[in-house]
Length: 197
Image (cartoon, helix red, strand yellow):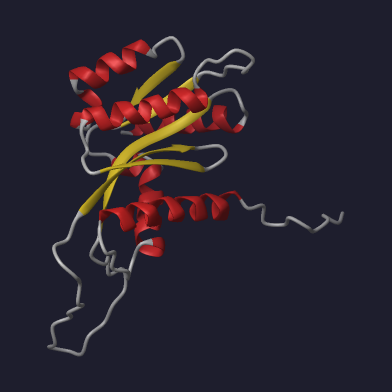
């Protein structure tokens, strides 16, 4: 674990210097019924919140571009290898080799989840091996994956305490929340202030 943490620090330093593009990838899911990030009830009373119909899930597959702090999210009704490969296609379009685009080495940090280690995913990663390097995290070490913090923030602050009418409205809310989260994280703290010496 210590070696993985040290390796992660070195990769972050390289990304901060602009030598590489460092991406942290992982999956999560959101529910149409409300997340209760903070709630209270009288002592001894059950906390009940009315919610329509059956709860539905929307899978969120994403990557965090570490240096600019951009979160890229692809939504799906499932979390399968095909869904992850579709996310890789999105990474291709945004970061892959293209005429006229300066190419930096790309490092994608992944855990050993089944959709990352399936035959189909391994083949898709092998096709991109000339420009995409995978850094595998140790098993059961979510604290080493920086995207986990963003999933938590997205759910607790942007999707919590809401009921969605169905997967389509939740899907739209996820993409709106991702855009808002990216704006918040990329905003310069002193946009219109001069720094005095």
